[in-house]
Image (cartoon, rainbow, N blue to C red; front, side, top):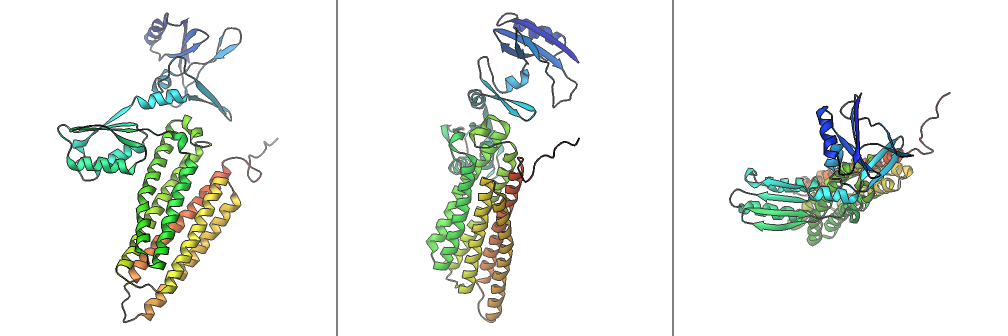
Length: 406
């Protein structure tokens, strides 16, 4: 290991110290401490993902280590910034203050070349992608004038995303700015909101079928935009937390281990909302075409939807409360859902046989509703399994590290 250290007063000799280190072919790192600026460079043999730092003694009792210059530069840290130390087992994690993290985020702008988005929907997806990646200022620009369809896609994206708006606009450029305070959107609250939207869409769709209420089916369909908006916001915050540890606590996330599980659940709930929207669309079609569905089939579908709602609610409750028995009960309900699904299939077969020679026009849309219900039921099982993993992330009486053998 090769090491070089230089000590100088603040503002005096710092550039010289860096220059001297560069002459040796060494990267220089810096640390302010007790009115001194210590430049310490370590050439490590540990590999590209790990660097070693030698503990230095400054004064009578102060121990210091240097911060990697690349880490400091990347996070826009400067003298006087506060950093936080967090113990995680044998590891000591260093987190920049929120002020420094906010300064880092606010200085980055991203330019989108609208002329390269030459296919329908492409620009809208690019804007949504930048939003999900946590970018706060997005500039959409064309060489001459933004096409009308591009402006429509930009406005469509803004309507679908929470906390973003048009800050400035010229004939050739639109500036989008996103301003979201993560403390206002804890992840658990967003997941509950997603689940509530999907559940409401499903219950309204089946109620519309039972009562022949077209308006109720259309109300369920309209909720999909809200479900998409919450999903994109959740994904943005989770990806931001993955890149910035300082956001974890602000979002109510206990550890980085939870990010993957929350992301999978958010995706499952978003797809469940899509399936509920498809069910509402099929119900509306049945009602508008005045196609009569036999009462036994309507009742069987309603009972299946209610069981699916119970299972998903129990699975989500198990996740948030870390209740392993509740998760196990939700998995048991998943098996009941499979049996109830088979009951609906039997009803369809009986009705199909009974209507030989008659118009079975309800069979195809009802089969579509049943298929979508089966898909939604599977996501409750997925949430219950993630709840198991969440419970096992920390040692408990049920599962804990084995004592060392003597």
